[in-house]
Length: 275
Image (cartoon, rainbow, N blue to C red; front, side):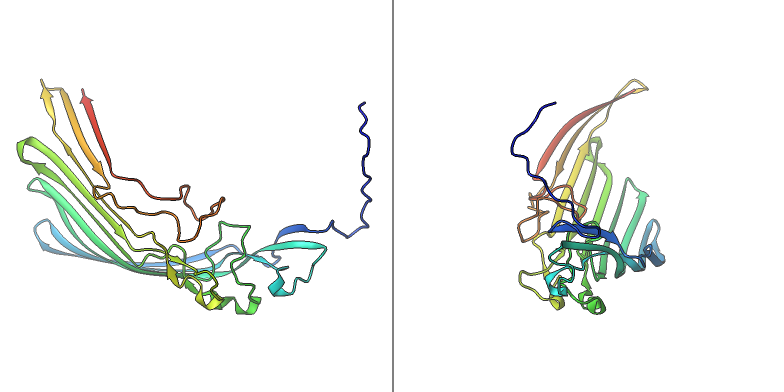
């Protein structure tokens, strides 16, 4: 057996004690599974043959949502220091409320084309949006009795969204389709903000894209087709930033696998053979 000189004997700690700066992660004894209540109502009214207007309202209330709190933070008096460093407790103290109304117009396929456009006006609020991040306490070290002060727009909140798509026949036997997607920026907490200013600013991540495609089928006999396609994505080359205003962290838990500037303008040529 190999031997190693200069080994340091680490004394065993008495029962019930931890090495200095040990972190603990646990789940609250009164933890509850999240509950979501949702209500939806929709109305569609015909305007003319193949044309209609529609209205859709959605309300969703979430309670007992996950919230990670560092009970041993300096703002809470660090009751377990110096023996313990972070003491993160997985609680179910957060809650949320979402409501949104969609206004739309729809043209069913007829006369060689169809289209649909809709606009969503919504409000998405919660007391904590970090249910995916077990390493960050975003509660500003508030006492548990004051966590409702964090109630503000959620990280996901985007007040205005617009979508439109159309497809149909064009001259010279061409087939075309187009799509527009747009949404306003999401919230961010300014540097140096207090608990009452949570998510009171907006990121630089508003989104707009115009995508389109043109195809032209060429038939050979009764069973064969060659269909070349020309497509363009993000036609106006919008930046569509994915990152927030602050430097993005190395580890990201907000649901995005990418950070930085979005996809640039792209062109794609392809050929499809049907038989």
